[in-house]
Image (spheres, one colour):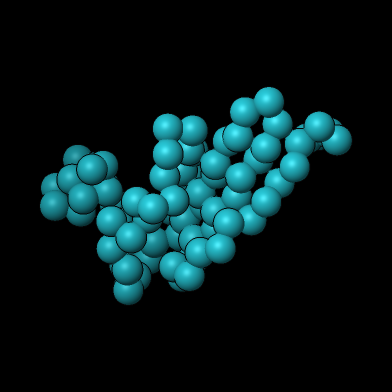
Length: 77
């Protein structure tokens, strides 16, 4: 499905339940997969060093953007 024109590199990340990959082709796309249980021991700001303008974030954030104002604001910033 991806083909032979892409190189996929895993980026070292010590944050529990977070996986960061770079998919390199003509451009590099960073993909961050996240599971953030309510008991997570890290802050959303800890992800900042992994983010750039070519990043896609997906996962289970356990944040309701309409109801969890403080957590939502932290995630979105």
